[in-house]
Image 1: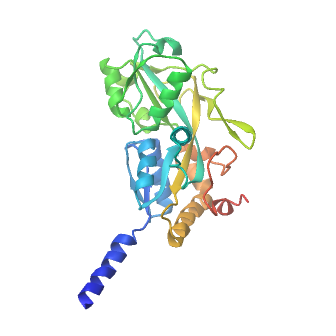
Image 2: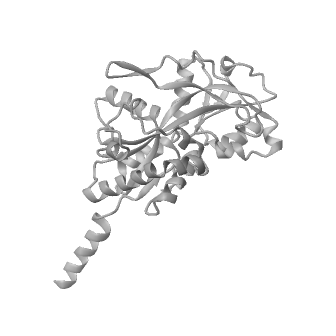
Image 3: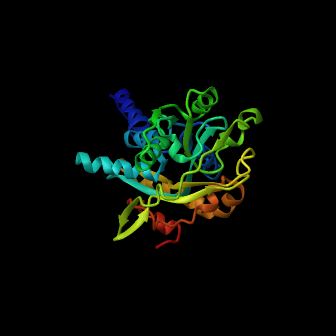
Length: 308
């Protein structure tokens, strides 16, 4: 009997009582991973896990019990909300926003020797839009539909798609990420000299809104990639951006895990000046403002940010 009791206690301690300490950070060497490392430098209790991207982060967060937070694009959640309404389900019911992180920029890359001169020239081209686990997949499909461009989708992960662009297997690459994207910063000179950015006209995405408290809030905002952001691009690029979010699934959260999550967010807030100086560039955009967010906010987090 004593042995059985100890066995049951073991199961409870190491099975049922699994702690929520994982941060789902997206693709290897991507902006999310860099931002997650900034957070881990403040809170050593978290464990960073790479995934296939924003969509994978969302899906894993719903299924797993050990996730403290995940990085997700706002348009990925809004797209899921649309699917839920169509199917009369509510997969988002336990998702809460911890922090609006700033904006991720749509990067479109083409070869210098291609005949693509304008955005509309992507029609009938082969465009790499990321894997089905990446947020770029959702954004690219929205861009394609709104822009009325019947290109051919190629589902390859970002770094692989860069290789395919050089080899001529695809004509363009779409990637959504917070500037600067580390992979693009480190392109070797011989490769970088053969590619360039393609602009997105201002009228393509400016009229896509969601309604919050009778106000229309733009999902995408006009943006630009400043000259010199990447060593090989000495010109400004007009494009669009989408909000990036830190989110959490509260379905199986207990009080201890709730307090641990708030403690992490408090460390972020207290060290916000340090993050802006030494962390990823996106921290300079973080203003702890939830006015553009169309999803429930995590309980207690506004108090942590002194936004009551």
